[in-house]
Length: 347
Image (cartoon, rainbow, N blue to C red; front, side, top):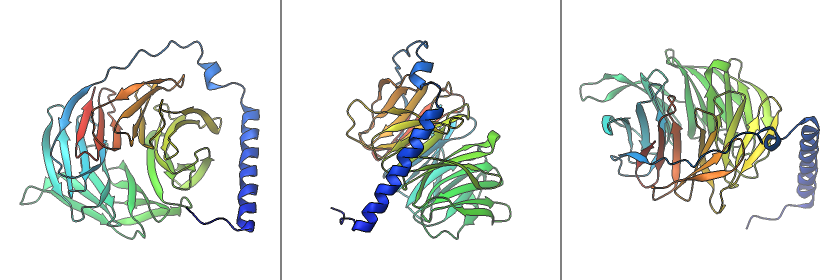
């Protein structure tokens, strides 16, 4: 049990909660409708019948992340076995196995071009590999090791081949020039570890989630916070932009997933599993914008009708916590990673 708050701290928390409720009340005052009312005429979503198309076997320890390349075919996964594996999801074959200097990898991402992969974790470093350029042993060459973090690297996204943005346990987000190996910009992002990040490159926006329970929207050109969103009651484990760029979804330790609308500056829907016993670890949205997917501690991926808020079913097959979820840009494939040492491709 955590220690009890002293009277002064308890009073400050009450004042803060009162201000948050006041803000929520003002937001509702500007709402001319609800999501439920606006989508009441939409047809019900048919039952989704996605199945496992490929089981990607090769890791011998917990898989902590997975991410599709821009070609919607290749996928990178990172594991506590100290390996990155680049997969061909169409055939299920390994393209490359990249040994890491540190086994404690927490994130792995593909550049949209498919030329580079990046990873990081408890080594407090972001390492970038050129998958098209191999050394004498056949392993992808390291192009950059970006050090200078005071906490673990939890998330990163390529802005382009020569530029990457990272979020870390030191509460910072940082933009790097990969050719020069220098920081272009850095700012304190949250008052807790940055857990997750989603990029909308064409709008120059990123959204970040944190253990401080709030979500922030940033202009990546200036690294200035544009909007802050509240609502979750525990750590925000994952955030993901809606394909339209006008909204985003989140997944949290409070066992809910939520939809936030950027234009109205507020939360518009809460999604709860039928039996909300497990935290939600990762989330994404189908390319149609209609289906919300959220991985869970209960080893399944929950599906919801994003517009109507109705639970549509589960993707079942993993045998342990779901750690990563990536939807291919083509919209055809879904990849998930898990503590069961496996990666699955669904369709």
